Image 1: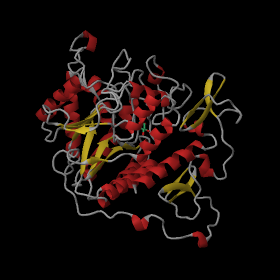
Image 2: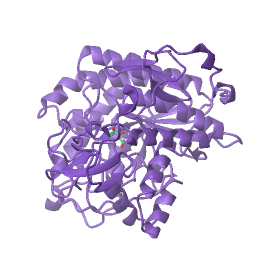
Image 3: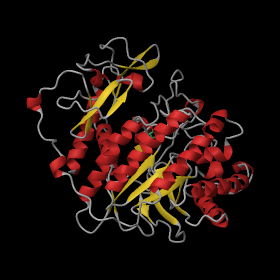
Image 4: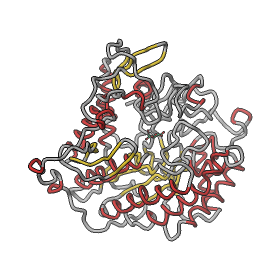
Length: 491
Ligand code: BGC
């Protein structure tokens, strides 16, 4: 079962690379000629340089519209699962395909290929305590495929061996658009269920990431939904409700949901200075209340709200405000329950940095590393009356102090290194730290460095941001390779 998902993901990547002008989706122009010299190859396709800029070398014209976007055309189905400005989408063999409008010959329609072998969920699982403890962590097949594509571009054998090891560690699966949620949620729940053969449960970790007006204080990860009533409605009905339905079905396996990174931290610090955050505020609050009510009553699901990182909410006044915002949000989702909080998601702040203490160097932040940040947050949140205060700390990229000169730098930092491996109960003196886990997949970009792209954020052009960088979420080979080289502990 697992192998077939890996193959599906590899096929999806291969299809993506053969799209006519793949680079436009990543914020880069197409090269004017398909004979352009190949300067660089990654999992997206072949890259050339024109007028000093990266450009994607176009592949020969594909035969149907969906292929231009990296998906096949449907061969048998005419059932429309989803419609967007590109056209009508169906699903075949667990993958998206474009419906061309051509009549489908009934003779070729057979039984749905995988349905017969789908595993059936068992009885309702009820989590008690730390959901990361005593379980196997599901390996994300999409990431395994990304790493395989990265290895194919490497010649150094010691680097290749390090990259191979990356495929043995679990990381989170980001549901960052409605379409990606439809593609990845059920497939991976099914994959994890199929692995639950003995008594050991298999845990899958998803990131819920599609709030209206997403990433309100920056540009690099702006999402598909805008801060308005109709998109807020779509968030509920096309995204949250669908996730709820699938989670209810796959009820015999543990699931962790990481909720909307950066959103509530933006409400703590950026309402006054950023109009986009003011416009998003009611949608962030309403979205959280809605999803906590739905997911927070499912016995096999544990939720963690995101609290930014030490150099965002670590200062005394920010922590004080944060305690108020988070306790209000959690109460608004009653009777739904939240297990705890995630910190350092997609950031680079070290777990421990004994060289720093409160003082002018840290702008008087008493929490200059993630450990001290969680210790302080635990105290403050408990004092504010939040009953369940447990943490999951993202260690995917904080093993090595990056080159950043200011801890506010967040985009594709040079000097990156993989941090502690995913594990439950990593620090015996912190019984409220549920896990170290890799939430941001190493190798996926934080944002494009192309100054002409709509989602270009100035931070991705700063001195310590590695360049040239593709769009947020797209594969960034050089960043990945540096993260492997600087891994701490070494791979
Ligand atoms: C991007 C998402 C992506 C995630 C994981 C975020 O910064 O906005 O699209 O899925 O990172 O790489």
